[in-house]
Image 1 (tube, rainbow, N blue to C red):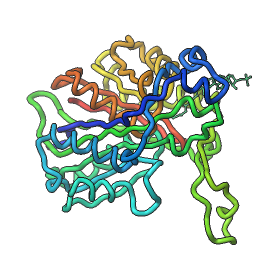
Image 2: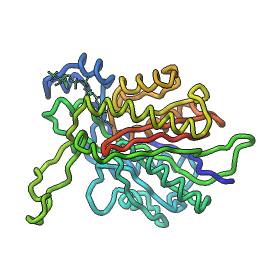
Image 3: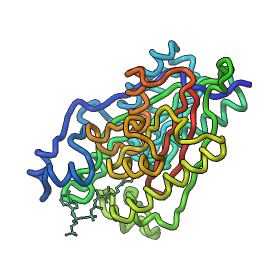
Image 4: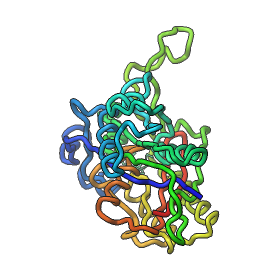
Length: 330
Ligand code: COA
């Protein structure tokens, strides 16, 4: 039986590095506080030529190169994002144009920080219906454009970037059932207010949206989000492992959503996994929402941290709330 496998990864980050020291001059904060409470030291901030679609396309080109495919061979482009260049067309359509992926259909998916996990799961479902499809799955964000730079509760946390992977169907690898094994995905819209980003103002005065502020930015009740994130991710991970009859000790690498080093450490403790088995780059890039997991996946792949047969666990939590975990045999 053919399963969805990742045959190439790529990532792209803006050139501009914003340090904690610079933030000290923008809001009442300190390198010490940010480092101790979040683990973040720097984040990347998009500039000219680094719109979400452009970062996404750059990451996709690198993934195509590793996969040994041309853009024309792609059948579908899926982008997980909450910061598309515009509401319409989708970021995925702009990536299709940038790449010249003329055969591909394309659409965006909004699951906030869980966007890449949700998109990967959608790709898996398409591959089940046609294993020959070549699908580009991307997580891409420019959160710097949606952050309130006067709000110290949020502006120190987020960054910009994109990660991508090419997915297609492939046969098992010897004894191993290679590829995308399973996922558990969840949502709870009743808690939306704890972490949200309002849309652009509406122009119909009869609609409630007309009263929204002109420049909506991310609003977050950090402590509450933290509490839910730890519990929800641990629960999703537990369920997907139990479902597949796998113990945490069998995992080769865990790539969690990169929001806060303390959330990542709690998860590692919960799984009784040494931190060496947990990929961390939140110190360099902060929280890039849907892009954190595919950026980390690309780094891990290029560092040779994934060998054939390895069990890889991905898990995420984000606005919605949305969360989940997926299990892949490399
Ligand atoms: N610099 C200095 N002080 C800050 C600060 C900053 N950048 N941001 C907040 N503070 C202050 C708060 O105002 C608060 O002060 P008060 O007690 O006088 O009101 C104090 O620090 C402690 O706030 P608290 O919310 O308890 O801190 P915390 O330990 O929970 O850490 C977060 C705050 C935001 C880092 C943490 O809650 C977090 O990471 N939450 C999850 C965020 C997340 O993952 N979001 C996305 C999910 S995908």
